Image 1 (tube, helix red, strand yellow):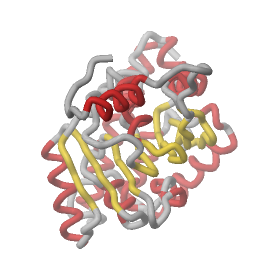
Image 2: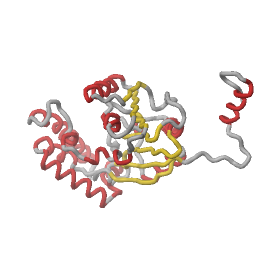
Image 3: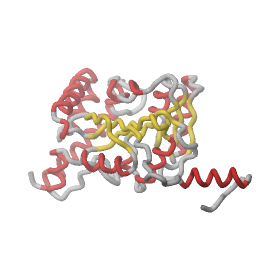
Amino acid sequence: MKASMLRLWKWLNEKASSAAVRLTKWTGKSREPIHPKHLIGDPDHWWYVPMLRPTDMVLDVGCGNGVHTCCAASHCACAFGFDPDARQVSIGVRTAARSGQANVCFLIGSAEQTFPFPDKFFDRVLFLDVIEHLDRRDVALREIHRVLKDDGLLLLAAPNRDTSWKKMQRDAGLFYYSDPDHRIEYTERELREELSRNGFEVSQMLPVVLDTPWFGLIDLVGGLSLNVYRRLSRWKREQARFRPSETTGFRVVCCKVAERHEPGEINNLQLRRALVHKSGQLGRVEV
């Protein structure tokens, strides 16, 4: 397909998806314009919930409007969410207040800086559709590694850049990421390597939905009929499981890999603490 035709097709898809959002309000499906995917009660949207326990402390990195933070709080002891966008965080605060959730705490902060939490504090960390928006991804992953308990889990979602539809766009010289704000998208191997480099081992990798050039038309159908859209969404999920290389993204369960030290090597942090204890001083000690 020629680049000009692909460009036109992409434009039509984007317009169709935008129209679907407006249609949900115009047709009385929602009080506010919203994507139909948020109206069909898709249980896969909350794929991480079965991995949360009632006693868990959960952190939602890059929580946005707090929808996943509040969901997690319904299944764990306490959930923290932080995001640099104060307006989005305020939505999360109001949502938790309306739901009467007292076990939710929101903060304003960046995933690319030191997290305001102690070491090994959380049992589960949610990192959902955030990593692709970051420049300093290694900083974020190392901080997650630091605040996660040794037996904890990182639950991550990231986009796949290696589908047939995206390759077609890339080969035509077009921008092919699924969002213009994405700094990166991954192949499965690239994602595994980045996680491994920062101290995580992938224990499970799940597909999302089929990446198809017809996504705009499918969204438009959702603006008109949620029942038909629900069936089409189910078909997309089934196709992604059947053809995982064509999934729009990856849902990843990661275990923390303990830091390894050579025999006889002394951990700098342990040595620093020992010197502080021995000197009876508080504050910085140079080692």
